[in-house]
Length: 111
Length: 114
Image 1 (cartoon, helix red, strand yellow):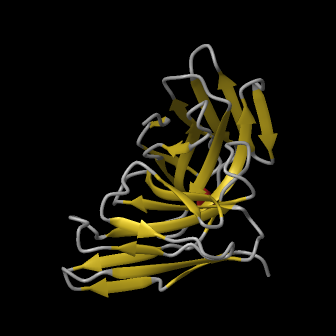
Image 2 (tube, one colour):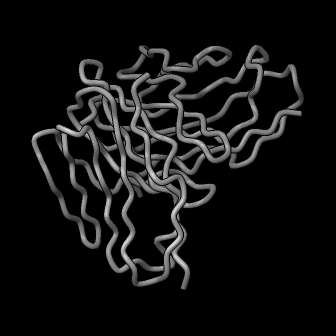
């Protein structure tokens, strides 16, 4: 089944630095969503970007979408230790509208 | 206080036993989902339901069963036919089953079968 694939698998940065995570997919999409998961918890929705949008902002989060390259990026600016979590992108399969999740990027922000 | 709840948080069972995981939501959402997450991996869709008394198989439905008798409830049964049931199970809901709606997740149930 179609799903997004995140890159890198793991990322470790210092507090205050920016963190960039990427998501690639294979077929056309209607929507792409980013979620966050703290260890052992459920996922929390961060942001949704539609296929006709190129960029969206939410607080310290910036998401871009390049449909020609079939990729999206999530940028967290001025990272904090509390941003330590796994981040997942989820894409739909076009006609079915089913959402599929990638394997995630595990972000560690060191204080 | 609206939300989605799962119980129990931890569940232990012997091999060969069926076990049912609870999922309840008071968000008045039509769509509900069950996912399985293995260590260091993403989520895989087991079953989803768009409306009461209707549900569809996801990518890994074999060895699992669900029911949707009430809008608020979507229990998942892990049967003895599931070959590798030990995993973290997540339930989610959304207003509709369309990708333009965000999914709200429960806290998860960690199932260990020995």
